[in-house]
Length: 447
Image (cartoon, rainbow, N blue to C red):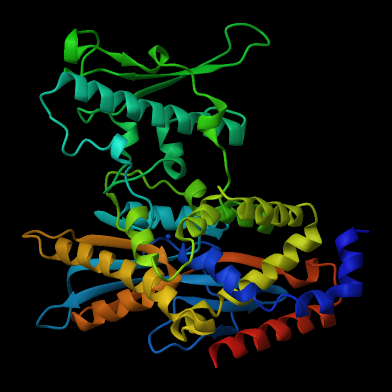
């Protein structure tokens, strides 16, 4: 018998009583810190029960037979012409769950890639060492130095990918979650002159040896060969990547995905498309906002990106859930129940988090709305604009669009995660007790 199953039957209620702060933890994991053809996971199921915030919700809990579904919305908006017909740019708000089922992300990727511009979340920013802004464009030395630093950043990401997956990436697009971004791309993947680095995998030279990779910049002339600023630059001319550079730390959200038997958004979706633009605060901006609100601002970011002792401990605990099917399924049920009421909790400024939520939600929302305003103000604005952000952000985006005269034209619901109550291996009475206990815990937060 599953050892967790035995322990849960004896100590289940005690464990739940000790988890009164779990809802806030799960909200942070799932929501704060990103018209397709209908498929099986897009089709709504009966018995929908939605939270009831002032505006149309972006999250709902669905029950069908023994299955409980967590569904999130992609809602499109458009203006009307004088005859009341949809007209002008079509803006689609895609609520993101940062951990979910692979099919969920595949469907959303297809919808967003059809947009002319996609604004996506991702606190980060461009390290000064990789940025070409302000660099003397006529300086051969500066151009080569920036390119070499970018190549090393890309090579480090490749080494991190190999450490995590035991193989080299197929192409550079698979490094999206490991590289800093700026605007709509990842400068570490291009040289100073704007050309994408040439990446190749090389098989082992002999049996028992390890494969290798190469990174090359064609230089200022963007052609093979050349001299001076036009000469090719190869990463093989640099010292090899040291283990200290790799620092292959998993973020808490990735550990949460593994514990739930799901996948992490940045691992499942490609944010490198030419139409995709980062629309979020930089790490420097976020730390500045947090000054005075969080005693140790750097600790917050380290916990989320996996580089702190606390994150290591939490990550280790989460990874234990993946060792037991019962534990994993039960954690998924708890997560679904909590996230289904996320909008309600966030709008209530629950648990004294008003100031922090103002930073994590409101200020970052202003960045997105400013970027959207800039797009709409263009002489020929994009006809299809997508915004993929955590579900907790979407109600403000929706309100802003409504205030500008946009109307909701279509809503697609997708299942982000599901759990089979009959497959938990626990008595249904105990499962129902757990769900009621969670509901009471969330009720106390929003009062």
